[in-house]
Length: 59
Image 1 (cartoon, one colour):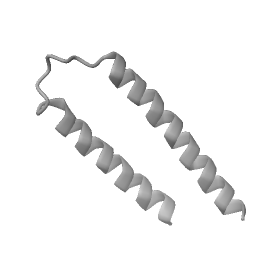
Image 2: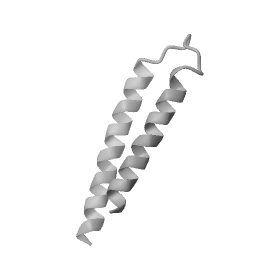
Image 3: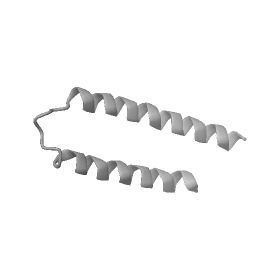
Image 4: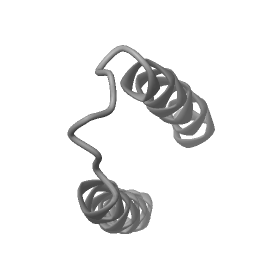
């Protein structure tokens, strides 16, 4: 049960970080920017972020 609580806390912490990052991205969003430039890099970095964390938390 204790491990469930810590997992829940870790997930909540990650969600807080993601929401802060999302707000920063919205503030700095440039509508003139080409959609193929940064979103693909960002998409890759988030997928690798989640894969790394999934490996860490699955142990």
